[in-house]
Length: 453
View 1 (tube, rainbow, N blue to C red):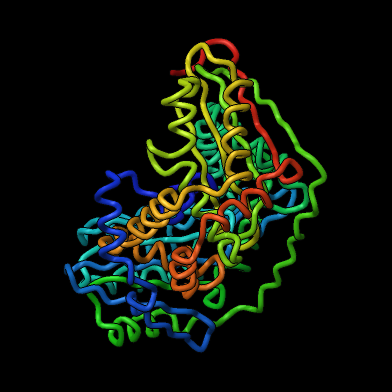
View 2 (cartoon, one colour; view 1 turned 135 degrees about the horizontal axis):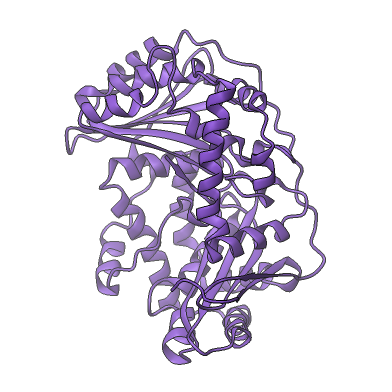
C-alpha cells in the first residue's frame, strides 16, 4: 500500500527529455484531446459511476475504484482515518481472509496497490484482460464486507505510526512540507497531513474507523475506472453483476470550511538533523478548473521544466548556490490548493541567499512576460507528458481518475485546450496576482547535528 501526499500526488508531470524530442512530440501530437480518449460513462441504479476506456494495444487491463474520501473529510482529533482504512482494506473479509486479496491477484499474474490523498482513496489492479473479473468481484466484496475488529484496527494503527515516524519524523524535507502546510492553511482541513497527526493516531478509537468506512465506502461515493483490452458492454455487465446489488448510501454532505483570507506572509522554521538547509515557499492559488490555473501550470513549467528552466539555470548552474531548485503547480484538488517554489542550499551556502535568489526569479516573472520560446516549450512539455502517459493503461486511468476527483474527467479536454491558449502575458499576470506576500507561507529547514546525506 502507498500513502500519497500532496507533494507527491499525481499530476500532469513535466517530462525532462531533451528539448528537441519534446518539441517534436508537441508539434506532432498537438491535436490530441480528451475526446481522443473515447471514455464511455455509465451509471448504476445505486449511484456507482463507471468509466471505461478500451485500449487494445496489449492484452492487459487495469481495474481501479476511487472513493471520494480523503484526509479532507476527517475531523480535528480524528485525522489519519482515510489512510488507515486504506491499510485495513487489505486485511480481509469473511470471503477472503488476510492477505488473500493481493495473493489472488499475484497468482493471476497481476499486481495491486492503493493510494490515499487529501481528496480521495483509490485501489487498483493491473493484470491480463481476460482475468479482469477477478478484481471486480473482490473489490465489490470489500466495499461493504470488510472485517474491522478493534484488535486488528489497533494493530494496523501501530504500523501506520511507524510509517509516519519514517516518512515524517525522520525525514527533514517531508517534515518541512508538513509544517509549512499546517501554517499555510488556517481553516481548511488541507492543513493536516494525509497520514494524520501522531497524537490522533495514538488515541484513535476503532469505532471511528468503522463509522468512516460505513459512511464513505458506498457505491454512490465511488467511481470505477477500467482501461485496457476489454469490451465495454462485457465488463459493464460484470460490474453490474458484482456491484449492482449493493444498496447506495445516503447523500454525503461535505461541510468542511472554505479557507479564509490571508493577511500577510507566514513563516515557519524547522530544526532537524539534516545535511543541508532548504527553503519551501507555498502560495495559495485556484484549482485547475479556474482559467488562471492553466496559466499557473505553464508558469511552473517555465520556472522548473528541466535544466534550462529559470530556477535551475539561475540558482544551480549560474550562481551555484543551490543543489536543486524547483516549482510546481498543484491544481488537481477538490478545493483551491498551492503553488510551490523550493530549493536546497549547496554546501557552504546560506539559505538566506538561496531564498532571496528564489524570490528574485519570481519577481522577474511578475514584472516582465516570459519569452514566447519559454511559453511554447512549457506548453509542449505539458502536452508531450500527457501524450506519453497514453502508452500506459495505468496512467491513462490515473489521469482520468485525478481529473474526475478534481471536478470531472471531461476537464481533461478543457485543460489541454486551455493550455494551448495560454499567452506570455497570461503567465506574467497570474504570477503578479497570486505569487504575492499576502498569499505566501515560507518554511525554512535549519540543520541540527549530523544529518543524513
